[in-house]
Structure formats: structure tokens, C-alpha cells
Image 1: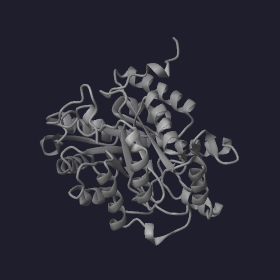
Image 2: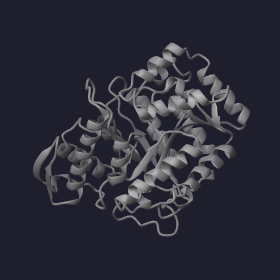
Image 3: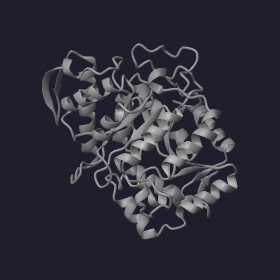
Image 4: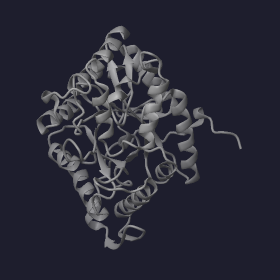
Length: 387
């Protein structure tokens, strides 16, 4: 049987050239001017982080990731609920660490927030350990599978009827119906182990990748499409990556060096190791990229790995001028990427700079709208919803 061709990957989005452009809300205390240097101006406070989110909202970003962490930062769901009535149009991509909340109560919390946001809610499924937990990866993904299956029953059936390894229940599903009636909020998912890939292929909507070379991304996307096809499904693709854009490539590279100019190796190691997913396969792959990068930290043109010296998860940035960055994003779009979750330090200034210099060069659309997830909204049949 021949290997699948990346050029034949089938994309569900109604407009093949549209991509969702999202920003990042650094709830996990990840904002700074110099990597590894604590600066109270950029601490994860309600005032600072909500300002970043509302800036992205004002600038027209379609979505924003609200991550989850125990060691530092703010509670994801409390933050999302507080900011929901303040934003105007942006969707919230809210992280859920499976197992933290009893699934029916989680379904009710999601439904409540989905109504507050009038369907502008997406869910980032996380399977890393609970705080203080010592559980192997396979067990965590089995638990995540059960959580997702219960959520889907809650959103699509009249009754939750479930018997599993971790959860067993018979409940009326009426109290947990979300605003988005066509299957509930989109599920974004990231993971690299075989168990993670199978879970995403069977149950999730967007496979969210961390930066890799284009060749490696193509292999990953082909593999995921093949796995999803075995379940009669198609999965969209997202890319979580940092960005450094300046008027010239030289200026962008200079700012990249500015970011790491005060970084001590010991501080970077401490930052990388504090996350609950610090020993995951995905984090290991980011480290491998740094090992094969050139002397400046580039693993391929425009893709700089130096930022991973002080980041546990997404460990690379696109570095270049506006034309270069837009061209690189278009290359990803041609490969099949339909969602970008971007960030830059400091987050407010870089959010504004990227919106001004690169977003006008892109055709953007909200994935939930492109897939007709949000009720009473015109389905995208010929053109994408533009922001």
C-alpha cells in the first residue's frame, strides 16, 4: 500500500486558503522582555493577562489560547469566565486537564461558558499529570478518552450512559447541552505518543502541533490523516509557534538575540523543568531540534530554536520580516495547517506588531464558523468569515 501524499490531505474547512489566527494569553507567567529574567511588569496578573486578551480581541484575532498550569499563573476557567463578558468577538481556546473535574460537571461548566460566549468557545484537551500525580502516559490517555467520550455523549445524546475504567454513570444530559449544537465546541489536541495520536484521530477536531521542520510536519500530518481515516474521520491541523517579526530580517534576528541576551543556562533549565509535561515526548522533540540547529539556532530558514532554551513546550519561533513570515505561514497553509496559535515577548507589543504587519497579508477565518459549529451563523460556503 503506497504511503499517503501530504498534498492529498483532505481538509474539512470550507475555504482551503483560510486560516484561523490566534494569540496566546500567558496565564502561566510566561511573558517577559528577556527570557529567564523575572520582571514584575509582565507577571501573570488578572490586569496584565486580560489586557493581552482584550488587545488581541480588539485587533481581530479569531481565537486565543488560555493555557493550564499548576506551578505558576492563574486558574484557566476562573480567568476565562471573568473575561468572557469583556471581550467583543474573540473565541476562547480554554485548556482542560482531563481528570481534574468530574466529567458531567466539566460538561456543565463548558456548556455554561459556551452560552456566555455565544458559541465562541473551543477546548484544548490536555492529558499531562495532575499536580502531585505519578501516572504513566498510557493511563492518562485512557482517562482522557473516557472524559472526551462522556463529554460527547453529554453534548449529542439525551442520556449519558457510560461504563469505563475510570468513570461509570447514568445521567440525564439535558443540564449540560452547549450553545454549539453541532457536536459541541471544537476539541484541539496536542500529543506525540501512539496513544495520543490514536485518541486525537478518533475523537478530536484539530491536531495541534509544536514547531518542527516542514519535512517533519508533513510526516506528522500525513500520519494523523491516515489514522483519522481509519475511523472515517478528517482532522484539521494547528500550529503553536512563537513569532518575531520586524521590518527587516536583520532586525528580527537582532531582537531574537536580545531576548536571550540575559538568559543563564541554569535559569532556562529551571523554567523548562517546572511544567507538568516537562518529560513528555513532545518536549523531547523540541530539545532535539535545538541539538541539530545551526550556530545561530536556526533549524531551517526562519525557524529559530533559541527560544526553547527557556520554554518547556513550544520551543521555536518564526523570525523574519513581514513578507518572509507571511510567506512561511502560507507554506504551512498549503500543507494543510488551518489554525495558528502565536505568541511573542512581550505579548502585548508583539500582538500589536504582528496584527499590523502580517495579518493583513493572510486570509483569516474562524474554524468553528468554517465548520458551521456555531448555530444561527451563515455557513462558509464560498468565502471564509473574515475578521
